[in-house]
Amino acid sequence: MPTPMPPSDLFRHGLRLLLDKDIDGWVGLWADDGVMEFPFAPEGRPRRLEGRAAVAAYMRHYPDHIDLHDFPELRVHQTTDARTVVVEMRGVGRLVRTGAPFDMTYIAVVTVEDGRFTSYRDYWNPLALLEPGAEFAGSAR
Image 1: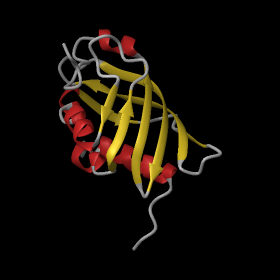
Image 2: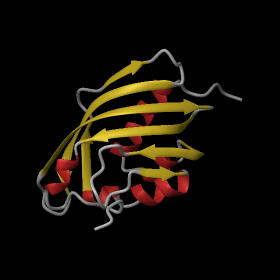
Image 3: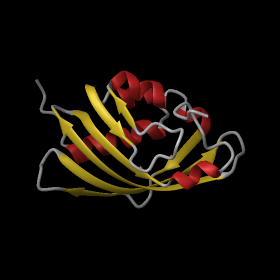
Image 4: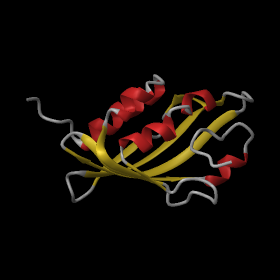
């Protein structure tokens, strides 16, 4: 049995899958009981997704709304817990519906066990949702 990827490598692999619009592949990196959280999510948006199926449902239509081109300024920081990394990054691309530029900065705290994401806290800027076309399946609107 191959050794699972370290958290930093798994995270980078996940970004490549997102750029390739391979949402199924990205969701496949999750543990069955993995949890994704959005601590800064505004009213009407999910704050917590429990389980791979919930993450899959949330992300299913992401590429139909946001066309990611790159993740420049990626910095992955190892923590004192070998299973957890803190990531600073910027995602750039365009909003599919309007063609407007998409430029979002993120900080994520990600924990990996047995080669799968088990916890992913995504700190993103909720003001970006004010842009027309920025909503996707995760929206309650």
